[in-house]
Image (tube, rainbow, N blue to C red):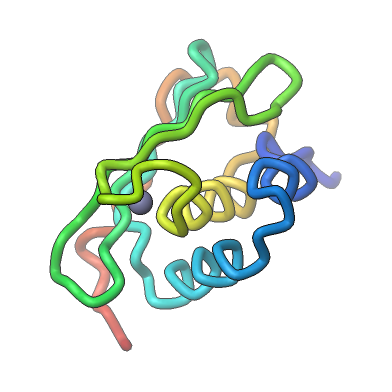
Amino acid sequence: MASKHVIKLFNIISFFENDNNTIKKGENAIECNHVHQMQYDATLHTIRGDVQASMKNKNYKCEVILNKNGEIKEAKCSCPKGIKCHHIAALLLFGHYNLSVRSRNILHLMLNLAKRNYVL
Ligand SMILES: [Zn+2]
């Protein structure tokens, strides 16, 4: 049975207002294993995660709040840009691929990928 995504691609693309470059950079960050951790709180509709900076050995903290329809209500990042950056795009795309509606009943979903061996 196909499972529904918590974060729909359409909502990510709408949020970034067709800023393809940022979405592309977010996708690259996933391919480089730069999303180190993701936490999903189904009750608060919140997704938090650590995303590594492009050229530095440093993580930024991202937080996204969805509304009940799954649209992105608020998103912020600890990087200098702070909003609508590729770290947020990476976290949202990562969430799109890894969270299904069946995760909804689980209060916290932790995917700790930090111990993965990086192949860059
Ligand atoms: Zn950022």
